[in-house]
Image (tube, rainbow, N blue to C red; front, top):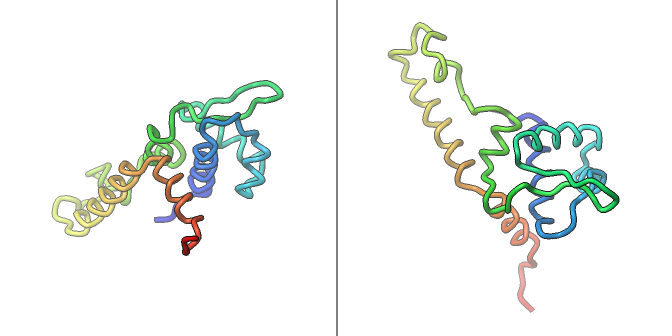
Amino acid sequence: MKLSTRTRYGIRAVLELAENHGNRPLQLKIIAQRQDISVKYLEQLMAILKSAGLVRSIRGSKGGYILAKAPGQIRLNEVFNCLEGPLTTVECLEDEDYCARTADCVTKQLWAQVQYAIINILQSITLQDLVNRTKNSRKPDYQI
């Protein structure tokens, strides 16, 4: 399974907003610069995230984008599903008629376990968790 650029960039963009939570809105050009994403592509991503109710846009000279909810209230699966769509490891998990072997296929069980594990991980992590991980990864290894 390989995640799309849309999902990888979109999660980086909302993480940027989560790190900025409580401050003034972030302009697209700032997010784009910090995350090395083109402004044009980021506009498309933000439109998708906005229509899903995950981000809000603020107009005006001090405008930009903010999260629609606190970072601790947004789970990664919400962002993932918005950008990537529902996770399916193999077609037969959604459509039993997809394959004639579905009824007695041992590997179908394996792919269902993989899918379930990924979904559980995405549901268990909030944007705040990622913000905390980011802060912890920036701490020096030594104490003064």
